[in-house]
Amino acid sequence: ILNVEQSPQSLHVQEGDSTNFTCSFPSSNFYALHWYRWETAKSPEALFVMTLNGDEKKKGRISATLNTKEGYSYLYIKGSQPEDSATYLCAFKTSYDKVIFGPGTSLSVIP
Amino acid sequence: DSGVTQTPKHLITATGQRVTLRCSPRSGDLSVYWYQQSLDQGLQFLIHYYNGEERAKGNILERFSAQQFPDLHSELNLSSLELGDSALYFCASSVASQVYEQYFGPGTRLTVT
Image (tube, rainbow over all chains, first blue to last red; front, side, top):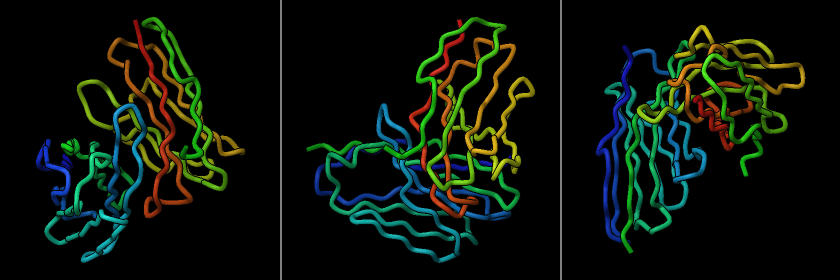
């Protein structure tokens, strides 16, 4: 059974702090790794799609890295703001087209 | 607004009934994915269609079926509904395969009583 894990489960940081979370996935049958931002009462919003080992993506204060050989991806947020409060989901896409979501990391940024 | 539309927004029905959820992808997107989020579970992948053809199945029950029509909209049919089918059903679309970003619709909240 393929499993995607995310840690920590939840995180509370002060405004201005930088933070990071981890997504762990199977190192075999890798095709792509997606990161999403999911605010309460809204739909998941795509942040990054990562496909190559060593990939690094950046969007504003948010960046992500990928290590397909060891099966993990890190998401970094620099200088957290209250509007960054959300659940951050990763989704592992296999080479045979299945998608497995992690349980998410819930981030609360305290003003 | 992602450009993906889903109807209806809310649906309340009784056990044993059959419902159809509809999804219209963003203009130009060929892929449609269906996901289910139950109260006690995270997002679960149900099924993926690309340009009218089924590409992959996830945790989709045999009571559920889907199709993608020539105009690329998709429908998810849920039959013999059970209380446990109560969930938020999302569809998402992308240009092509999974290496592209997926854009999620607002979801359909299904309540089975």
